[in-house]
Length: 357
Ligand SMILES: NC(=O)C1=CN([C@@H]2O[C@H](COP(=O)(O)OP(=O)(O)OC[C@H]3O[C@@H](n4cnc5c(N)ncnc54)[C@H](O)[C@@H]3O)[C@@H](O)[C@H]2O)C=CC1
Ligand SMILES: CC(C)CC(=O)C(=O)O
Ligand SMILES: [Mg+2]
Image 1 (cartoon, rainbow, N blue to C red):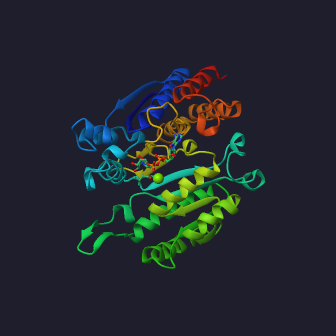
Image 2 (cartoon, rainbow, N blue to C red):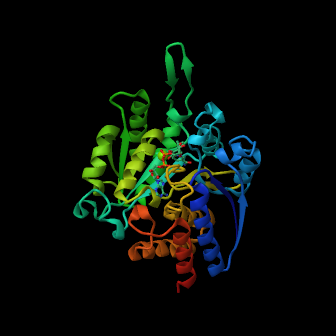
Image 3 (spheres, rainbow, N blue to C red):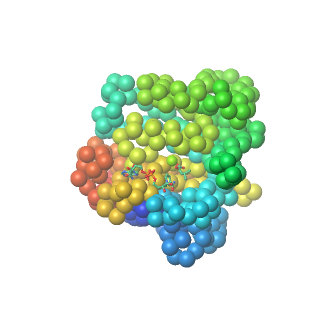
């Protein structure tokens, strides 16, 4: 198969973890007899520095055409002085998600055996943790009207019923393939959008009688995630809450550098589901350029792209097995207690895939 996708390394550690993931993709495609056709494009601060808009039309057009996107990260202090849509986050990342209709953001939290003792939780409390966050990605406060007025500043938070309904359906469908439990997280004691969220989730739940539904308020959820992480199966939540809760979930998994993500659309007219695959972390300016970034989240995101955009299950599994072996052998970066550089982690995982029988 010819694996044609759009590669957007972006900013900070994005190109570093991206290079490691590309090395693993090269090894995997060679090993399984495929060809790799990566369309490299600029996005975010890297595009701004090249005199372009944060999301150049050529970059967007490639994403739209290939329907499979591997993204590093965008943003960083260098571009923090910019305002509104001139910023990498507001001018590139959010429009990419919106324009590709990537409303379903899936982020797993399943700590690897080798990392169980790195989390600040006791092993016996963490063992068996295996949940997936289904985060709504194209609505809510990040996309609302924002601005300044004489009194200060505002960010509007809006959700339509259909936006809540479609992500709830995704969460219940996913729960049906897993342990049949959905925990919906909102702030319905205060927010009107959360009241609509809860009503709509209840309505969708009535179509899935086999699935247990639990509601939690987001402030309490931050505590429950640390005190009873094994209680969750599918965690359904809105855009900003999902953003924050998944950074918290990364602590259970040992590092920000190990959680991949998939952002998916519905099938388009051509039946293609568009997918963007990216680590949950950002551009990590504090470690950028030092070879310290953990590339596993990006490598696992590439594996998800092979599975979800190209249906290449054995290929994705080969990468995931190699990652597990690397973790078990301690061949990892400093955030996980290892001594390897970003590149070294990438090349030893590529070697493991090449050697796999
Ligand atoms: N999807 C995206 O493009 C995202 C972009 N951002 C942007 O990234 C920039 C930096 O944001 P921060 O708040 O610093 O969040 P961040 O996720 O980049 O970093 C938070 C902390 O985690 C560490 N970390 C992150 N990824 C790591 C990795 N792969 N290996 C080892 N350590 C890692 C960093 O060194 C830092 O101490 C901001 O401009 C932000 O808007 C943030 C999150 C997502
Ligand atoms: C610009 C942010 C909304 C990106 C982010 O933190 C995320 O999606 O995790
Ligand atoms: Mg985030």
